[in-house]
Length: 106
Image 1 (cartoon, rainbow, N blue to C red):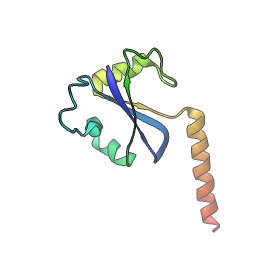
Image 2: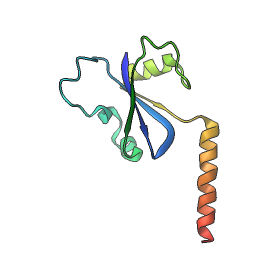
Image 3: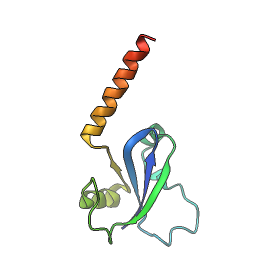
Image 4: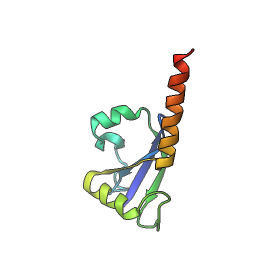
């Protein structure tokens, strides 16, 4: 299974994997690869940045997620969302809370 990976500057450390099961034969026409995402979810992501193309058949392991879970989601829904680790999410929430509190007193 081939996939493309995108990141979104608005969401640190979150990556979206998009299935490309017909790669390389799917490149004749320019496609909106992110079109498989639910519209509401996609709208909240902001602008995407292509990170890389990956052949999961030749990749033994992935850094932060289980390869089998990624494959299952790509096959069933056409995409997989890799969320940031909990400690990163907690730190980001704390920073946003501090910024909001600082803005109250500005």
